[in-house]
Image (cartoon, rainbow, N blue to C red; front, side):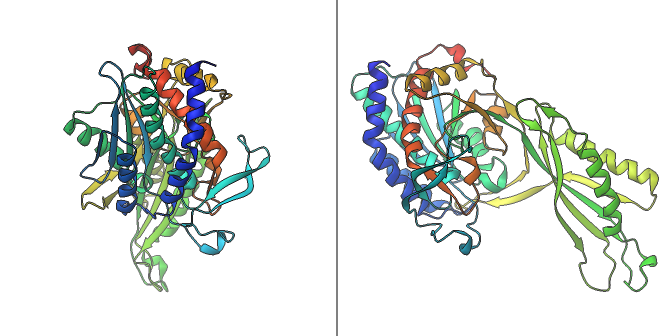
Length: 436
């Protein structure tokens, strides 16, 4: 291990207590989607305290903090989302306050969830999605700044970004940040490190997702004389049966796993007793593999509809990509399709190679994995084709659960890993940042 990597590990120990304290304060700051202002303020105040040279909020409420080390290196973005899901029923939290940020010794899964360790953890909503990792990312910038002051050659620009509305709105905050905010502030980025849960592994991709909405039409009648109408619920039965048959034939990717399609919500109208429903709406979750898109998924469902129509002349349905309006805490409203594309970066990509060698240099055994869930990397890696990896101390199995927690020992390791990744990648040639 070099002097630089010794310094990285020593410095990670130094800033670890402050990072844990910051993670606690983030968890104590409730930030349900579209209500992230208080936590955005918390991020901005912390970055200003740590000496970030440029800290600002954009029109949608995303926050950005920059530290420039030189003009001749890459810009590497460390990204987190600021929102989280609802805490759910409080009696499921085993006595923990979901916004308490309590620290204690507890039983927690090891890295591959094959056994349990006793470790000090922070408990609370978003500890694992993604406030534990976000705290590490913010303090990574501070570590790099101090390493520069200690005389180490560090190049490029470190950018922390905290985005809004990741949970409900399919890259809404990220898309606005990249497509509107960055050009306005003359910012670019060459690669991204996502703080989504990775259990200290390097995550190299995820399936995409599209939410389809199928509307099956019927005709009302009195429920006492159902033959006078067309029951949309009954028509939905044949559609759902055909959908299940189709789902069993979907392809599989060696790394990302199976493509899936499944109904998630069913509703009907008028939705009253004694009346045959004339509309049945079915929300469908389709997980996509590379090469599949919202359009190809919609075509698949249309093929199912057309086949049923040929067999039943009274069947009528239409399919579309669902979209929802979302108004940010700044008052900006966007209507976006609920669609994210799949992405994957090769283990041999030079950015991944740099990240791998960086983690090994600070004594971490490197493992690779792929997310089951979708993330904002669908914009940066999927659409923009920028090299991207996931790396953080958080564990995926605790996200969105009442067992939400993050290990403090993993926070310590992630501080060293994040700093080493930035230094290793930023010191390499432009080939390191070629499109994926």
